[in-house]
Every structure is written in structure tokens, then in C-alpha cells.
Length: 399
Image (tube, rainbow, N blue to C red; front, side, top):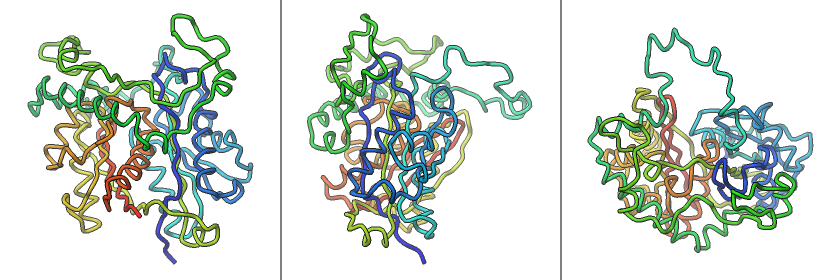
């Protein structure tokens, strides 16, 4: 017997600046576990009532190795009897975790599932990564763009579709302005589970002086937003790629970030049994592939697929959370889909907030629910491009 997949709680960590922020020393199980602990607490469920934990992670290495979904469940203090798993669909990992949780609930396999994702980017194997046999040369011969970096694809999208540097900077400024405005709103307090100074001190007893950090201070806000950003300031930034006509800069691309988010899914039976208060219904996810060299356009294929599946049109969606991996691809997707910019990322996007890859899909869903409640929207869609050439989109109905 099928059941709606209710979302009954959401919590996330603040997002820290990768490699230089207050979260950089927290190991992944504890960071992810922090989000899980607070999501379960907010749901009103007892820890032993959780049937499964599913966490998305795009870089399951460093402190994120060895099935971070299971490790984070244990770090959250859930009983060892509660299982856990890890999902990797790159930037959509956190959304796919929700898709699996929803299917488990809808089909009766589980009644209560924690789903989300995170990325402790500061502690994965970056500078010292073993490059030997990292890429498949046979695949590269057949499809040379297979391993293109997301930065390279952002430049390709900008050039191929005529997205100007000025237009990219304008979207970046809007993202920063909206994020700055939202920083003092109730929505941020509703979603963020602050990291205490005591918690931080377990991982960073002596932060380097040049970081300007103090373990005597916790973190209750996102570190990446730059509220003093101006269009003139953005225009002065040098493109990251030193090539002619490059337009992607540190100012119009998402920032590297650490963070984790979790949502609690429940069946109709669990809602009644535990007297839970549903926030939304998670209807499902659609995924579509595209050319790897323009991976940023993935949402233009995933969104129509999703809406057609549920018999909806663009006009039926009251709120959009579209991951701003880069301004070039975000602008192209907004324009091609015909979205109303006043309904897209109205509390700021990843250009301002940052993009912890595995966290983003979960963060977008949680933010969409809270924002849609505030705006009175019935349906929200979360969507993102995916490294390697894909797009994903999820449909949420607000209760």
C-alpha cells in the first residue's frame, strides 16, 4: 500500500568557508551527524524509531570515506541498529538521498528515514590526491569531455550561449543581496542548527592566527556571503581561467564550502503513530543526462521531465531553488525554462552561500519548504546541474 512521503523536519549546519573557515577542522561524521541529530530532534521522533539513514556525498574520501551515511548516523547518536548508506550523484547527491528515502516510504519499505547530505570539502584528498590511474583513457578517447572540470564547462556555456560577463556579475550581485537580506530573517534561524564553541574546540584547539579565528566563538550563520559586494567590485575580478574572453570569476561562481543538512521523512502510518507534523510532501525526482562539456544546462532537461511526469507546468510552481553553480549556467537555465526571477532563489543562492556538493540538494529542499511556507506557495521545485553532464529536479508540495 503506497503512502505519501512526508517531510516532517529539516536542519542544517551553517556553511563554512572551505579551507579557511570555522568548520574546516571538523571531521565529516561529526559534521554530518550534527545535522542529523538536530533534524531528528526537531521531528519529535525517538532515535530508535528511525528505520534508515541515507546521506549524499560527492567526494567519499578523506574523512568522508567508509560509508559516511552509516558513520554519520552513529556520530549523531542513533542506535547501532539504525542502518545507513551513502549516495553519490555529484551535485545532486543530497537530492538523490531524498528520492531514495521517499521511495522507501512510498512503497512501505520504511516508515521513518533520515535523508540529506553534506561535504566536508576542507578534509578531502585535494592537494595530495593520488593521480595515478585516476582517469579512464579509453573513455576519454571516446568522449574527450568526460573529465572536464565544472569551471571549464561554465566557460563553455557562457561562450556557447552568449552569456555576458556583465549579466553573470548582475546575477552574482543579486544572489549576494538576497542572501544578505535573508541573514536576519527567521528562515535562517529556522533552518540552521548552530555549531557551538565547545563543539568546535574538540576539533580545532588552536586555530592558526592568520585565519583570524577563535575557538571561543561558535558559528550560527553562513560564512560565505559578502554583503558589501558591488557590481563595480565584481567587474574588477580577474577570470579564473587565464584565456581570451574568459568570464567566470570567483565572484560569479559558487564558493567552496563545508556543511551538512538532513530532513526526516515519514509515512502516513508513522505520522499518525508518532503524532508528527508534516511540513511537506516529497513527490519525486527526475534526472536527465546532457553533454558533459555543458553540464551546467542539465536543469533544462530535468525540469520538463519532472513537470510532465506530474502533469504540471512552469506556471504551477510558486517557488524555485536552482543551484547557482555558476552564474553563466544559472542564467541560461532560468532563461531557457522561462522562469520568473522573482520566484528563483529569493533568499540567495550558492554564489553567495556556497556549494558543499553533497549538502546542496538537501539544503535546497529545506530552504524551499521554509521559503514557500513564508510566501504561501503550494509547489516548489529544486533543481541543479551535475558534474559529468546531468541535471536533476525534485517536486515538493507544501502543506
